[in-house]
Picture: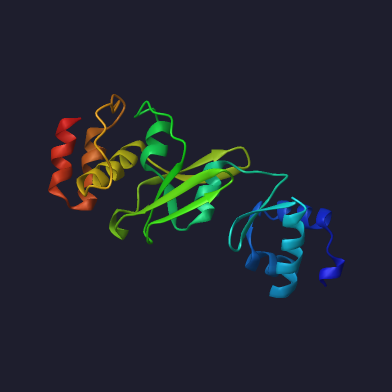
Length: 197
């Protein structure tokens, strides 16, 4: 079966099925090939810059690069974009962020790919919520609501994993939402931090 595959047909099929980013397992299922045959084909076309390897077992069509936030969601699941990246995205902090920061309910993880750092910080399962779906062109991704991105950040400050930032721009932040979201973490110290904003 693998002999019948050619890169143009593979590209068209992956795009038609919405798999600009795909796992080797998804490739096997889409083209009904064995694990070995899939790996051989993918490896060959990574070397020819037809596919890009994002991490072990995860690849991207080079011709159709999706949003960097879409890639962040796919690299490590479940996750949503939050913390500094989301705070910068919403204009809550003035700094430009050069890595993509996300939260996850799994263990903390980091990936270096596409010349960028993708950082995933673990939060408790109960607090893994209050994200929204944003659409960018043909792609959609999960990103924290503004108040949740700030709540996630304050939680990490409260446990010593982030430094305090005294330049939060919170004019458009709902204090009621922020308090509700920080309560998910069940840490009194976060309430004290909110008072400083």
